[in-house]
Length: 478
Image (cartoon, rainbow, N blue to C red; front, top):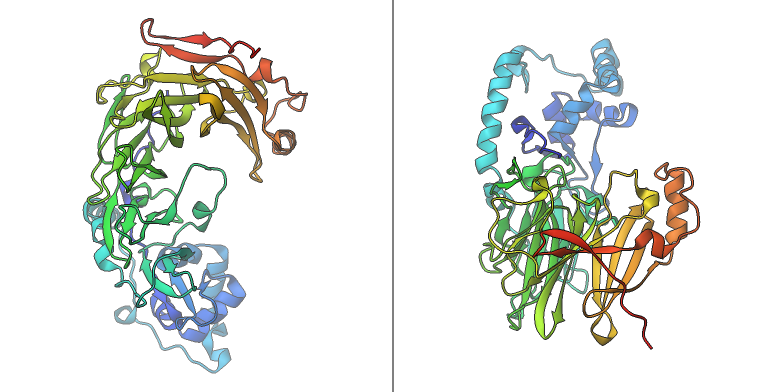
C-alpha cells in the first residue's frame, strides 16, 4: 500500500516578488542594463505583465537563484566579470566589496539550520498572514464580481463590463494550468456565485502554486464580494487506514457546489482534499460563514465527482471517486443531511480505522476496462446525472491522453442501481488512438470495444456479508 511522501519542511517558502527592473537589478547586485541584457542574451527568467502595466516586468527570487546555477547564468556572470557587462553599453558597474553585496554566502551547516528553523515557523504562521500581507483589494464603485483571470501571482476579478472590481496577490506564482486543466473535470478551482443568498456574489479559489510540491499552500479561499478574505480552509487532521497513518498537509484538489440539502435559498460548498500519494481523500461540507467543516466523509480513492439528487424522495449525495482496493471507480450514496463516515473495503489496508462512524447507504464499484489493466491509474467516477424514470447516468473515466482526450464509459442504472446498459462515450476510439500514441496501451489496446465484456459486471457492497457482490443487469423492458 502506498505511504505518504516524506514532508520536506525546507520546501515551504514564500517566494519573493521583484517588481520592475530596478528591484531585479538590486536583487542581483547589478545595473539595470546588465540584467536587461541577461534576460535577452542568457534567458534570465522574467515575466512580462503586458501593455498598460506600470511595472512592466516582474521576477521571483527563487527563479533567479535557480537560474544563476545554470550554465546560462554562469556565462552571464562571467561575461560581466570579463568586461562584457554594462560598460559596453555606456554604464559602468560600481565595485562590489563585501560590505556592498546585497546577498552573502554562509556555511552550509549554518544555512541548513537557518532554513529548517524558518521553514517550520513558516508552516505554522506564514499562510495565515497572507490575507494581511496582500495589498488591499481594489474596488470599483458599483462593480459586482462577474469574471476572473489569473495574472502570475494574482487573481483579478472584474464586473460584467470588464472593469476590475478587486484583485488579490499571493506571495508565490500561481500555476496557470491548474485553472484550465480539463483532466479533472469535477474540480471548480475558481468560481463566482451568491452562495449564501444575500444578493452579493462571493468568489472562491483554490490557490495552486507553480511549485506543485508546496502542498501546504494548496488552500481554499472564500472572498467576499469586495475582495476581502472571509476565510481560508485546509484539512489539518490525521487519519488511519489499516496500519498506516496519514497526516497534513492535505492539499485541496476539488471544490463542488450543490443546492443546500436542507432546502434553504443558499448553496452548499464542498471541498475534497487528497493525500500527497492520492490515497486517501476526504470530502467536507464547509460552513459559508466560518469555513468550519460541517461533515466529513473519507474515500479510499481520489474524489472527482459530486451530485445532489433525490432517491426515494430524500436528498442524497452521490460521491464519485476512484477505488484503490479494486483499481476501479466507486460511487457512494450518502444521506445528504448527514454525509459522514467512510468507504467500505474488504481488505484492512483500505478500511478507515479512525474515521467518524457511518458508511454509504449504497456503495458501487465500476471496473476498469481490461485494456487498461497495466496502467497505474484507476478509473474514477467523475460525473453523475439524473436519468428518466428514476434512473441515473454514471460516467467512468478509463483513461486520459496527454492531449486531454477522455476514454469514458457511460452507465445507465435503474432506480435500484442495476445496470440497464453501458456504452463508450463519443470520442472513445479517438482517445484510445491518442493513448496508444502516448504508449499507455498494451499490444491489442486498439481492438474493438465490447462494452458488456469490458465494462461489466459492477459490484455492490454487501453490508451483511462485508464483501462485494456482483450486481445483475436490470431485466429488459417489455
